Length: 154
Image 1 (cartoon, rainbow, N blue to C red):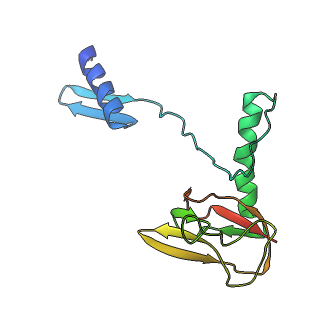
Image 2 (tube, helix red, strand yellow):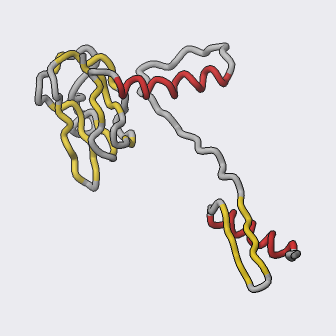
């Protein structure tokens, strides 16, 4: 059984246009399936930076691997405060206001640590335990995902 190359190209074009990974058509004369390997998924990891990082002479693969490993470790940290929702993080009540917390500050149970705006509602993220803020892992205006570590309190 043979197929017209134009048909195969047309199916391949449909895959590209729609983002599908495979398509199959069947007629009385036969069946054709066109599949492509999906592009690798890349994940952008953003970490809060308080000062510019010094330039390093390390090769690019090593530099790219280091930031990706940190968020996984932060999520498993005993003092990690994880995002309970998807939204946008805010470290202060309004632009120009003092932040709710700073690194090194002692926090009490129930104290507001930051806000997450979701569906035009500002949700207070409160401390579940008392301790000292060791690291703030998000910046104001940064989108956050469910379960993402926001800060570390020890």
